[in-house]
Length: 301
Image (cartoon, rainbow, N blue to C red; front, side):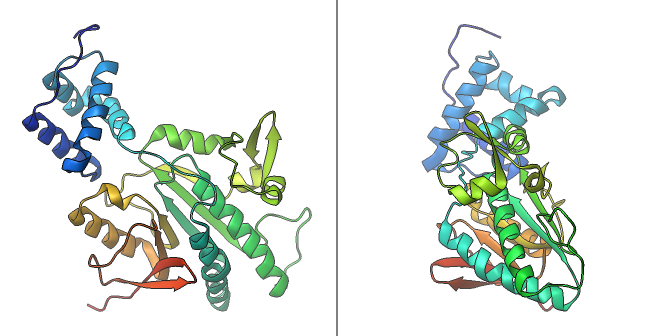
């Protein structure tokens, strides 16, 4: 161990060994185009751990004592770029069309539960955006399709008998903690208009705190998409700008998992630069204007 020496550059063989370890742990794939990024993050972690050789760092990562460091490394390999109301055309499709269809179908079956999964939720802006949109859509739907149930007072965010759960998951504990805290600065709130700020946030000094009623809809939890133990029975899954970290084989495995995790006719939203074309025949592309999603097809065995 050394506190002053600069970690030596990784050899090609050493880099391949680290790439294999990262792939094995979480499915992230670093090809030649992204190897410089990987090397940069590895050098940072070596410096932070006060280690000056690849061998000592690799031994730490594969040891029982190194589990925390492995988690920190994986956190450093994800960009965690996010914002409220990101890709508005997609969210408008979700808000005005997908939810309306879902509410009607569920009410016809007397099923008033709605479950949405934000996979790769980062610091929480996506799941809180979804919660706001669902609350808005339900309020509007309730006005047009009132049920013979007396509305409690004060009026709840989710009108009975509806129950809404939004699961927000990520591989990074630090971003999950930020999401659970639910406090955002003015820069992070730039895309949130005044009416949403008024209804769903409390002003705390120069920052904005998500109101308790909205926070109660969103549940943050750690999930590694590489594993098989993922949330089931979802009506909608948002996994945007996550598959780009995976190679084709891992993307196909993930898509199969999402298919199993969705309810019949459920919807999957991915990043605007991502596509399922050539990866699966278990989903069909649906769109309205410039908003797109993929709907689950029932596969006959």
